[in-house]
Amino acid sequence: MKTRQSGPIGRPRGFDADEALERAMLVFWEHGYEGASLATLTNAMGISTTSMYAAFGNKEELFRKALERYTEGPSAYLARALEEPTALGVTTAILAGAIRTTTRPAHPHGCMGVQGALVSGDSGRGVRDLLVAWRNNGCSRLQERFQRAIDDGELPPETNPRLLARYVTTLAFGIAVQAASGVGRDELQEMADAALRTWPLP
Amino acid sequence: MKTRQSGPIGRPRGFDADEALERAMLVFWEHGYEGASLATLTNAMGISTTSMYAAFGNKEELFRKALERYTEGPSAYLARALEEPTALGVTTAILAGAIRTTTRPAHPHGCMGVQGALVSGDSGRGVRDLLVAWRNNGCSRLQERFQRAIDDGELPPETNPRLLARYVTTLAFGIAVQAASGVGRDELQEMADAALRTWPLP
DNA sequence: CGATTTCTGTATCGATCGATACTGAAGTCG
DNA sequence: CGACTTCAGTATCGATCGATACAGAAATCG
Image (cartoon, rainbow over all chains, first blue to last red; front, side, top):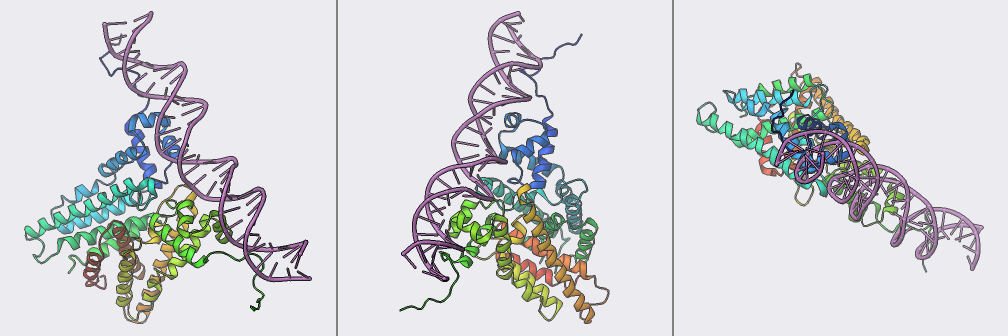
């Protein structure tokens, strides 16, 4: 005989919200915010529009939560890379992580933070601004990491951390575009290896 | 008394098709293919949907013609850059041209070839594939130019022209993303100058 | 002139967009 | 059990999407 624990009142949810959010993230990643219709989303999530609205609010809220999941999942390489002991190690890990994430087989090609809403119509302005902030935040954190390397004496004091961070993120965003164009992982990694041989930028 | 030249039969067009196409290009550039609605387009073009369909076919055909105009207008720096006498001159001109075009005041920020349709829903698949080809074509032409520099003995024979072209276009596409994020022209140019000081890539 | 051809403006088409109202179903309470 | 609360499925909302039908206007023809 099963003892009924005092669970949440009311009818329990008939689906796994975490799994549904993962599916939604993949759809947004592949088609972008405006390119992903509610019909496509809910079909991939395996739930009805009613359930989606009850669980996530609306389409924009769903995207915001999907972006958080992307940041802590496929894009977690960034946070890990920033903890590398050297500036070159950080940069190497960022480029390798960007290449791996944007060219993973059986996953959407490209970066959700870039192609989620690089431009938009009126309805996507909020999400576009969110992604602008997301990208600029990544650049800022990298700049701070380079500043630390300068303070630690690892990088020469005349180094411009802002330009260096802009350079690395520019490469990373460019990699995302190339991946979305179907360029293969090996070619991008060879290119990154060549670029890293010039480290640090004069 | 005006002599009637044998002009085209029927009622003449009441608008400048070239000017209308220019306006459409700017809208596609700013909002992307799917983000630009027919209402927004025709309003900017100053004509009705009927006139647009009669003159350009449909929305996708309008985009294709707008992309041609973009290639021969704002993106013409690429063809000019390829005629620079040295490989370094080519690369310098490409990066400077990309930065100028993607950060021009009173123009949309970013590159139409990147943000026109980096990803899409079902309706934009044709345009997305068109832009994939557009971007890869630019990379291929640059690769051929670098091959010529190798054949001419300007670049060392062990140079990999494919990787080098991929590196430069990756920077250019990354610049387009940064510009769409609001990064300023001067900062991007300083970054490009720093990157060019390492030329050629080892 | 009338016949013919082409372009324009209005009005609207069916499809799809994101978002909800409503009715039961599936649970926890007392 | 019946009262209460929350979730699920259908059916549909008004708005907007891209695209057209239709009638009239403006030109060249014979």
